[in-house]
Image 1 (cartoon, rainbow, N blue to C red):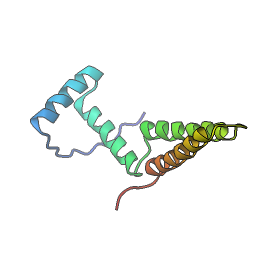
Image 2 (cartoon, rainbow, N blue to C red):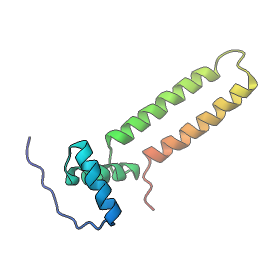
Image 3 (cartoon, rainbow, N blue to C red):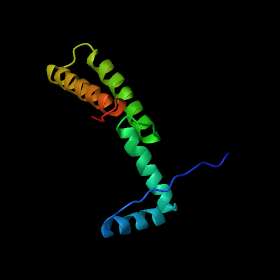
Image 4 (cartoon, rainbow, N blue to C red):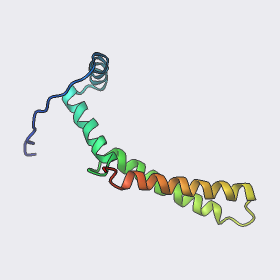
Length: 106
């Protein structure tokens, strides 16, 4: 694997943030720099500027949930209350998919 070119960036953290980052890095067995790169990757993914394992997992789970709700909803003789809950869930899943799939920068 070819070495990656990494750029140094200044980062200002509060004392509490710095202490928690130290603790997390030690717990996870990673360097603080690795933890911060993961955090930046996730942040970019959240705003549609990258694709991370986290956003792929969320997107896949939402799509699978949507399919389950769709199948449940098509069940014959489903009670009206469950029909309504399925409709609400479909809307919530659709909204969440938009959030994790589309760029959010304005």
